[in-house]
Image 1 (cartoon, rainbow, N blue to C red):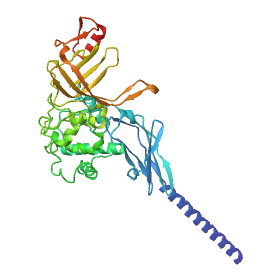
Image 2: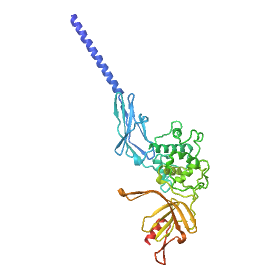
Image 3: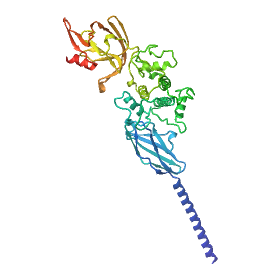
Image 4: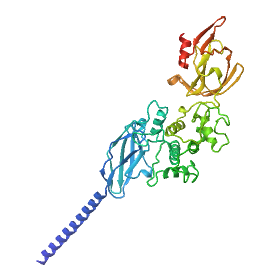
Length: 439
């Protein structure tokens, strides 16, 4: 009897040990399952306006989680390894660009020591920005749209840009910091601070030499003058990015001597075609406030050199040639004194050959001889594999004014003949060019 009782006790002990072991394994398995990442809130498809940030947020349960966000554009997948993105929320772009981000696919891989998982994929739709107070016929329309889409400046609301409003020192520092980051890193990731919105931009500007220490401390909320604006924006780009196709002599800006405080960056901007002056004399108005529309134009010209302007200071005194006119300087050759972007330019060439346009950097006149120092921008000749890039160049053009017909008509000397033919130049270069060919 004792023998059977002992055997029964052994069997029960074994069963107890087995039960306890299974229970521990189940508990361990349950613990693993409870600590493995589980996505509770998936990323959602999102629609943003051009210029707005592209941000995503997810909800994940688990212990000691790590995150790696990725996005797909044009069939190419990009992973974000930066530790700043090892979190459940992410800003993939500070400013949505329709040409780049529309259709972008976003997802996140989450893992820990107990397992891993993927979120669902969300799709970004970028809608073109439309401001009720910026119309297509406004001179700053294209500049505002480009600046907004590049993340350099934003509207004051989803529907308002306030182009006539002034801008504060803090806002200028933000613009300069964003422009510096765009140039050096290829994108803008700076975002407003939680306590004081401009703190991250000020710190970035200090760190990268855009501003010097606390030089603007106490003035962050003051409205910026035009001179202060240029002073803060100038260091955002490297010096070599400011090419100088415009010939601007020292002291040529009528209200800003070359030796004035902070005049150097202003003259650099004029020579680079970023600034063109506020009137026909090229005045800068250093103490005036700067509007948001003007700010957008300057930012666009800084980023995109193809939008920069050509000018000459002082504006050449062309006397009776004011306005578009043309005449022959040599047999069968036409010359137009015209304008481009509100500044004087010369178009010249043979009637049956390719037209050239030179931007006037300097004009001198002695009697009937007019000498123009011209700048010719680079351009591409032809298409596809046969395309040839013609480099920029500087040349002088001498014009004999004795044959000028001051009533706005073109005088063409006929070779070997004793008579002249007259054609109207027309109010624009295009009109005059057409008239000389079709008359």
